[in-house]
Length: 198
Length: 198
DNA sequence: GTCTATAAAGTGATAGAC
DNA sequence: GTCTATCACTTTATAGAC
Image (cartoon, rainbow over all chains, first blue to last red):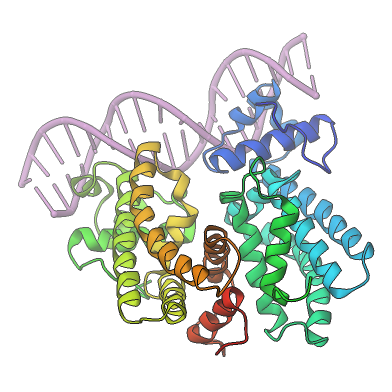
């Protein structure tokens, strides 16, 4: 229960604890099957007290997504800044996204993918705008590689294939298993630029 | 509303119409946000009448999944039987799965992926057994290719990467767009065996 | 900032007539 | 096989005391 109470990028304020607990429950049971009573109970307060911190239950979901997008966009920026060649940058992006998805922000990231449609249309639009910044970082790196001739497939399509590969990882990847995240990142990298260069 | 009332592999009986309507609603709104009143209304009956055909709402969800797994497992079998080389078989499998996921059984397949956890544990186990047969067909073909030296990555991992790629396609692929399903299948095939051989 | 109490609405499922 | 009517329960959110 206390296994991963803290989600990276979310502080330890009452609001932060509420968000972490919500992310955990939303991932486990889904947004609809999680009640405000569940969330309240897991931080030790009564259900009515939730609404002092958030106007609606949906606002909690949105806040989880907003926080995790901001945190991981910054992580992507740092991954790019830390390398100079297109290939090294792409490997770093893949590694960073895997870390987001099966590592320290796994719960909130999974929630973002699986509970997306539980957001109202206008909140979806707002979150989509934030996600657009994140995606642009990917597309810049992929376009550079494409222009250098490292792969021929359209960069937009390649990004979508990568999104699928990384996004599915929580359903099978075992962090205690023999395959490391770095190994997996290299395997995915090879799907883009081939196995030749290493 | 009548856009794709029929899901391939589900007949036109009252039960079949109920399943198709449910699949459509489950994909659009999710299992939890779809009420039995919604399903009943979309086939023109009252909510109480649903329970003459299905014991519980969850049984409807399970039936949708069971039907679509059976139908698409058979499609995979035919794809394999129609080709002889490992590479042609893999391309046919990818093409068949894309057809399942963004084509004629798109709604039910999406439901299977996104509403999986809405099934009770015992129904999940039953559905998982059916899915195991489907997955084994993939693994046989991938293992053959691996043993022939067409790729070096572990076949289990390769299958999971492919699952991610095809499973994400409904979120972006446009059947009216310039990219055909055959094109996309070839692009995904190249992620496995490289772009060299054509 | 949290509590208790409750309003207001919706839910899956059942019973029995036709 | 579908209808009407309804039960029993759960849900989000609010109000006002402390």
